[in-house]
Image 1: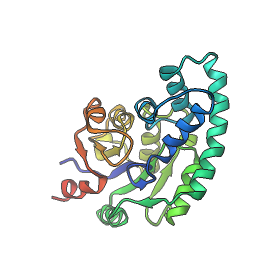
Image 2: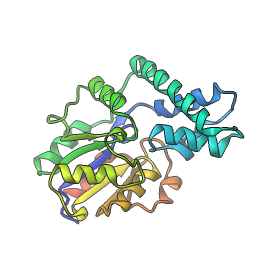
Image 3: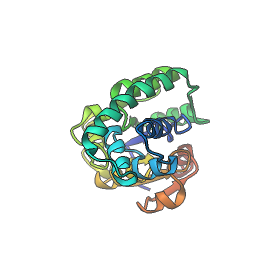
Length: 227
């Protein structure tokens, strides 16, 4: 087993249980423009991506829309407003055992970083709803706002490594609930990439990216890292 010093976990669907609310909201605002895109299509083409990119890719793959750049801009603006309302009203929780798992990792001097395709405002709203704080439950939060290139580019993971003085990606583990999370980890050179079945995509979809492990949820890593 690699000597892991940093774990980078996706947020929604991996460490936070929000029942695919973000992708249901993407579906809603796209269909408000006169389309009939399914949630499965949204998850297939948009999961894990920065959300403007996700909307653009779903519109491109699943509709016959014209002038997609302009439509994506409009839809993304509607999405941000709709998601804020949805998160204000929704019950958001962690998956069972998540905070104890974080504590176990940090007690072994493993840094815990959350990264996400959400913007900073949305990500911090989620943290506040859970009473999670950087420096308490987690060591850092990196959002799509913080980097030039979102997933599957390695920018967010490289930023996390730089933050904690880690120069060797063989000391990093990346886990997430979408194929693009796994590709992000591989593009970063992470020693271990993990797909989890607790969120956006199923086993067959995750297998396309060839992760080292596919687990029911991310806390099962405890049995792998600390055997």
